[in-house]
Length: 87
Image (cartoon, rainbow, N blue to C red; front, side):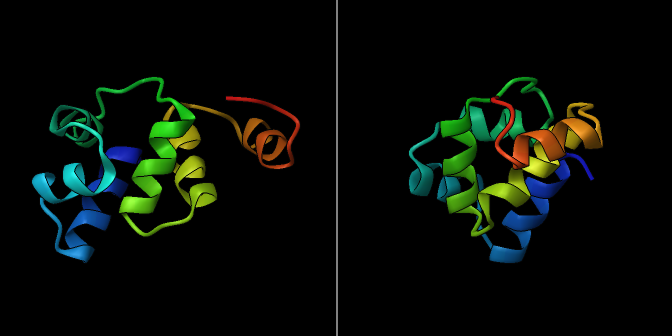
């Protein structure tokens, strides 16, 4: 699953609109639209943390989806999640 699908699914499960998530996260509607259309290739960790909190998901789960949707290998994700790499 890519990040765009994950974001859309979580919003649907929580019954949230673009307006809702923008207001709750402090991120612009434009940022949320870009996330939902997979137009963000490199996101700041601070943005992903706000997205995770707004969508009531864990940061590691969201980061895993983000890394996998951006072509990171399992090795790269394991290295990051073990604290050996930075975003």
